[in-house]
Image (cartoon, rainbow, N blue to C red; front, side, top):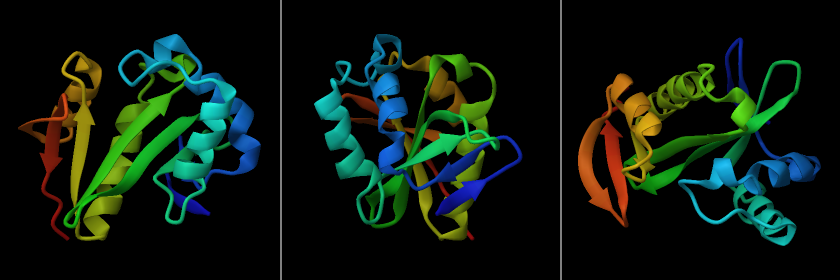
Length: 155
């Protein structure tokens, strides 16, 4: 199932067939720098089952129109009036506008659902904070060691 898409990126439900690509992503120390320790294969399988294949999913595969795996998008309930959104991308796709485009797609989706949008990132993750501010998110403080940015998304 396709969650949302543009001319450059498609966000779709994850599949078991994504496991190898997801493992390559989550075992990469550079990718995981601001998240947690790199995953081993068993942790990746657990993550795919618990977050990607859950009903409803917490994360969605991000792919190029030709089907190349870019990483994943975070999109799930944050609280009763908000959706958390984010992205984790393969290094080959950093600084190419994918995170920015995914933020726009997910913000528009939250708006259609009548929900606010929230982005959380560790304070050192300045690129994510920059993208949040560029999309109109406002800094709302810190929770569990993460900076919280919120965008009011009225229909």
